[in-house]
Image (cartoon, rainbow over all chains, first blue to last red; front, top):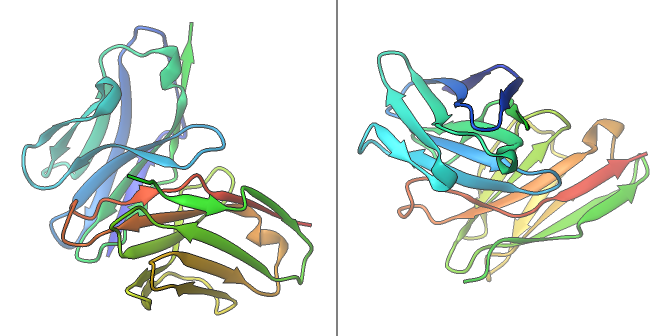
Length: 112
Length: 114
């Protein structure tokens, strides 16, 4: 069994501020973890993925995430928010099957 | 390399009707998954097809059915539409054994049931 909890349905930051989107997971097997971004009226785009190699994963658009097994977390960060980062972000976990389970999403709002 | 495409983009149907949504997978991908994303929610897994056979199913009733064709394109069929079926339907393709479970998503089909 696997599940994902994204803490905070909305996160609001100022342009240039640190972005932190939280994700905790549950998995009965070593997990694969993903962050996806969804812009309005579009599909999901992969930002980054953890596949049991390095625990600090770097993705596109300056985002990165750190896998912490002891905390069962995979939080997404970006040092400096840009207006174009405003979107919906989804954390997902997959285990023995190739079928990911998604969180409910966090809407990132960026203020000028 | 061609990405995942879906048709139509938008669709409006009446309760009780039937609908067919289509998906073309990314070049070289032999697995297609379908998801339902209700407004304000994350994608929910409907089912997956691998080499034309259903390879896993989520918690959706039998009126949700699918097909995969020899060229790995796929259809999602929904019978007896209900108002709660209104959602964005996403198709994703992948190739197990490569990309560590990574899925590539299409832009989705927005279905509205009135």
